Structure formats: C-alpha cells, structure tokens
Image (cartoon, rainbow, N blue to C red; front, side):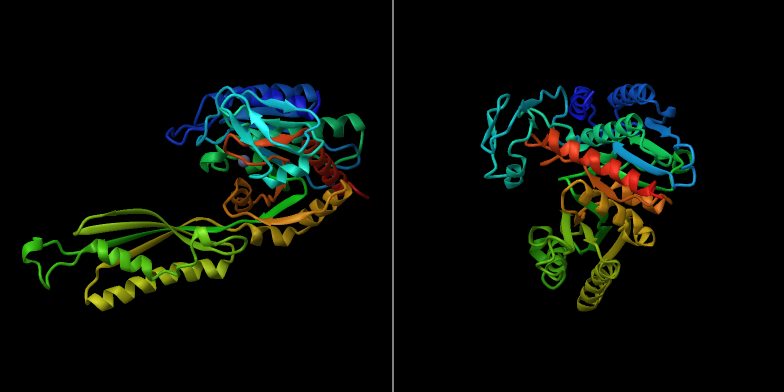
Length: 405
Ligand SMILES: [Zn+2]
C-alpha cells in the first residue's frame, strides 16, 4: 500500500472528537481508527501493539547492534476537528494538478490559488481535496499515513535503525491528546509529532498561554435617582479593555507577536465579567502581560477609590522551546533530514499549542514535523501525494541520522 492509499483508507473512517463528552476517547468512532491502525501496525511487523484508553502504541525494536541508539517516538492524532463536518469524507483526487481552480463538486465551492497561493506549490502533484461538504482529515491522518509508510519502508529497506516507538492519540483537536499519554510505556527518549503543514516546516516553539478572568463589581441603583451613586460595571469593563495595548490583539499580530484577546463579555450594571486569553512566545513577555492586567485593575481601583476590579490569571500551556533547547539535536537532525529530502527547512513558531508541547513538559521532548497538508479544519483542506512522500522521506532520514555511526 502506498502512502496515498494508506491516507485514503484512514480518512474513510470518520473520527471527529467531541468537546462535550468527558470520556476518553471523546467519541467512539475514534476507536474504529485505533483498531484499524493497530491491525495494520501488527501486519507491518511492529511489536507490543496495544490500545490503552483509546491510544494506540507499538514498537519497532532496534536493528541488532543498534540498541544503544536513542529510541525515537513518532506521534500523530486520530481525531479530526469537531468545528467542521468530519462525517463521510468523499475525497476528490486530481492527478497532475494544473495550478488552476478546483471545483468542490459536493458544495459548488471553488478551491483557488487566488485564495490559497500555497496551492501553486502543488502544481503537477496528485492533489487530494474534499468535495466541499466535509473537512478532509489530512490533519492528522496524513501524519498517521506518513508514520506508517516510513516504518514500513524502514523495515523493507533493511536500513539500520534504533528502536522506534509509534503512538497515535485521540482527542488532540479538543486539547486532550496528551492527557492520558503513557510516556513511560511509550518508551521513547525523544519524539516528533507529525502534525504540521507544508514539507520542510519544523516547529519547536509555541505560545505560552494564559487565561484571565476579570470580575468588576459595580453599584446598581435606580437610574432615576443614581446621580453620583451608580457605578456601571460594564463601563468600567470597557475602560479596563481600553487600557490594554490596542495593537496587541489577534487581528493585528503575527509571527512572534503576542496578544490579549477578549473572548467573553458578560455584564449588567451590578457585575461584569471579562474573559481574555493571553498569548506570547516569550517567557518574560507573557509574565508582563499578566502583570499589566493586574496593574490596570490596581489603577482603576485607585481611581474609583474602591476594590471594583479583580483579575485572576491561570496558565493554560507553555512554550516547549525551553524543553527542546537542551536536546537541540532534535532540530538539527530534522533540519538535516529535510535538506537530504531536497527541500529547505523552515522553522515555524506555532501560534497555538500542540500535544508535543505538553508531552515535552511531561518528560518527552517533542517537536513537530510536517504532514504536507494545507487549510486544515474546513472544506478547503487538501494535501498531495508528493507532499506526503517527501514527509515520509524526512521521517526516514531522521531515523537514519540517529543510527549513523
Ligand atoms: Zn492536528
């Protein structure tokens, strides 16, 4: 089976995760993927293949004489994003893509390089798109396909390698992919998630993330007789928001620029709560953002001469960079592996979090590699056979670099 055939066989099994459901996995359909992939892992020749709490684990023992090489983990996730229809995916396969518009026949939408210029990089490729009624599931079934293909080719080529641990996780898209990951049982010293975008991209920096809840207590008095008495908490809330740096908002930022994002405003005269998320790659700047929230509260409390505003900040996740830097061979080898595949490596700072970031703090340093997919989480999601082949080659190159004598 080729990497494309593997990919097509996985996306046939619908597996959206479900934020509303507390169980693990959050949707039973993910177990269908788990069982299918586990069976395939056994057929490929992996050992210790098992499903634990919806997670699939397996292992390829080291070539004789290579037992001292660090065990490298390869991780992808089995769920698809719940925010767009992931049921009954009907892919369109366009051979020798001409770089033009593609009609998504099920919905009449058009996938166009005018909207998505990176499509032009896929000219001449075998392009796989949706039919417009669902997402594709390249995020992250392309990752599963790449890992399975790489392992299969490593075995069939007879190339020497250290031990390889393979893990497929549920519920990544709802932020729970690392929750029940058995780092010890997995047995890898280092790992890569294969859950990124275009070939050559390597990610080892993500946001530091906090949530902030601002509670403003006003004073409600009948508006007809409230002169010099009423304090409208909603107005104080607006004042609070205006005092945050205006251009440090998601809609004005990119790259390494952090932001304050107001995600909720719930108020009446007496009481208002504001919900924010704070993001910054820089460890010091995220601390400064939390402190500024407190400083603004203190200023307003002083201005009004009473404790109207209270701010509570809470850490959501952290930038994995500090966990990766002590093991920078992970990035150096990934970069070399990309170059060996004939493309230019590109370090991308993730403007979000990843399971790999959480795993990195759980003792498994885990940067992220590309899958070759584009436009995730919606009907314009697509990938190409050639991209998946290059990503497979990159994974194989990494394994061979670690086994070099
Ligand atoms: Zn993903």
